[in-house]
Length: 406
Image 1 (cartoon, rainbow, N blue to C red):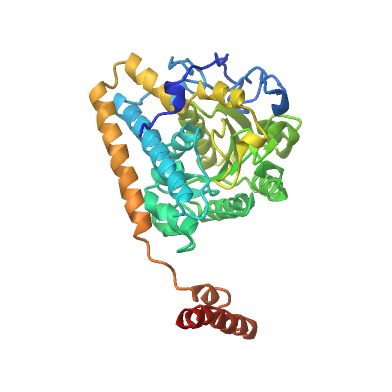
Image 2 (image 1 turned 60 degrees about the horizontal axis):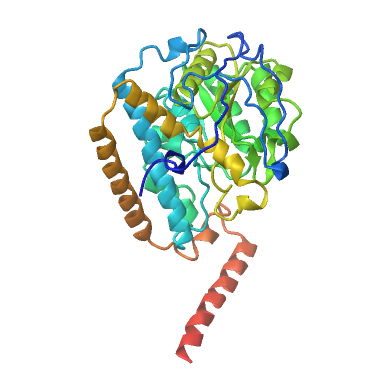
């Protein structure tokens, strides 16, 4: 099983990508043109927006006076590391999707296409920074050292998370849309009161940007100058709702109304995501308050495995984004710069297959949970209604045994 996008093998339309940057460093917004996208019903797309980009879809390095310094010292080994991160994250994600289709997982939220946004931002973090994810940040979890198999317990229904958030400074996945931004803001306010030299980052999607929780987080973080970075992965579709049905202005511009800077970055460019996130985290650690980063990317697959994206978007839209595949563009850069050879890619292919095998075996070896454990985590003390429901469930379970004995 290949670990790269089908974009590497199938004909593509020209992406028409425009290499550009935002304006001043202070706000990262000056000079950005407002663009509109035609509806998915017409199957067309508008010109790409101006954004911070350091690596074009063709794998060419773009100079940027504001953000180059944040990746100036990156070594060939570190570049190969970023590529490895993205490839293995994609392989894990593909295996999890397959496991769900085989009935081993109840649900899965794929990150396909968003690897650069997650790996770039995840590798920008310091060890003592704290992460509040949604339910799709598998790449960030990888960067924080969370074993991929630990991400699958909740989706298999055998636990409520599967890892200790304190050991990796990576919070448990949040299913409620947008609520983690409030958690991140409160945690960041506590970090500031403690005088700690660390920052907090909250991940959310373009759909969550319409939630009141996000707006409240923006207000509190701005007023209290909280050291938090809001990292919005704009993958163009909030389930079946396109971004233009969510907002009349680019998402990063919303930060201006709350009194802090926003910047739009090419979410398929791992170098740009690394640089911009480093900049935003440095602002937070130095007491300059919150930043909104909009990673402009695309969800290549379904919202979750219960979704059918063919019902609301067209194949040509995906094909246009496949031409900007984050893994393929970094590979092109590595090859053009002689930073990686075929031996490296072959070894990584073998490593990715080994990872898939390990994930597959680990999931199938997970023990089934105790059927009655669900009643033990509702109240700290006993509760009459829970006791009644437990008894009813016990009788229901016993009815199967009675049926088998007949």
